[in-house]
Length: 471
Image 1 (cartoon, helix red, strand yellow):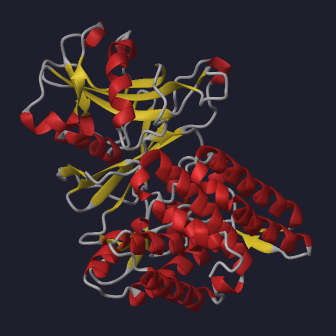
Image 2 (tube, one colour):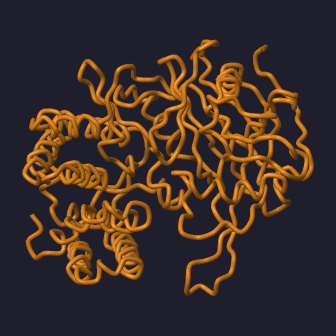
Image 3 (cartoon, helix red, strand yellow):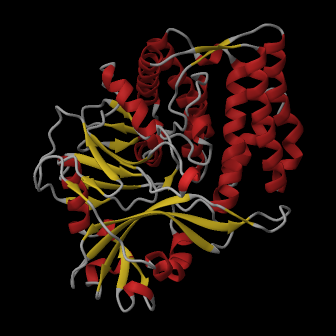
């Protein structure tokens, strides 16, 4: 395949209608589907691209589809345009046994009638095609495969789909690259590409630099089409032999070992990333007006969470006080510096190399929050609060729980952060408590919806954070 390949494509009319009944059943079962608890009532096609011309053996379609779902109870029961999802649909006459776990279903009508459709990332040929398109900077229909000019991508790297459940999908190529494909898609500049590119320009070694990326310019519906492209995926170097922080923490807990040295090193790594981001991108000062908006958002999320999860009600007043205390400080004239941050930092977003070096990954932020919010400057302590919550999660995932283990890790992490940043997050306890409370409230809603058996973990933090002395 030559450099900068461009190929126009056509897709058969009625393609989405052909897939509709199967996708209604399959999509809600996926870990990355955000609309759980509400039925899918239909789909709208944002874009469809034929990546492999149809043959008797295999065809391949890239789809961006918007899932329609009814509003939650109390909103009139009307349908609303739902989230947009990226799908890679393979089509075969029949699936070989190795692809049985990827089955979506057997099509009974439309242009794909009589054929079998499946999640194509499980298949080596479609995965190969994505890497080759990135290597050659291909243009296929509305899809643009971009690459850093001086970065080479070797062909022939063997792909394997990572099977761990997550909010996106990742394919590793020969222990050299990892391609993260975003599943829930919004138009605009995605921080999962924006921030690692900025950090690469700063020479920050704590974040794998992007090598290539995939974007879409959807065929719009006239003036209603988004003006900005969709970022669909990012290719980065694969950290060979790395262990993510969550796995490493659980391993040490199982052995009865502390995690203090690693937590301190992780604090230093976090501070180095924050320092580089503050150099690379603008910072702002938050005064009372800006803090009032921030506090209002935290309070509104709390009220919505109390409505959604009744077990929060006994703690609502104490949790609200965490936010009002911050507002009071701002009213008295306190200010804070805000900058770009990771936005969803926890142990699972950190990798430790065999040499003992820590890297931070997955800068997408919390996918449930609007993209504009995820790209706003925030106090760096927001990331710190997320990591402190993660230590607590690890300590409470074992039986019996180990709260002292979490306390030692939290202290070491903040000390390590102070060593690299020159300031200790614990010297701003009101701000730290507000962000940790906001995070715990988010966790309660998430666990109630997706993993009810985990709900006691954030509820234990809620009980602590709602107390008059939340140590």
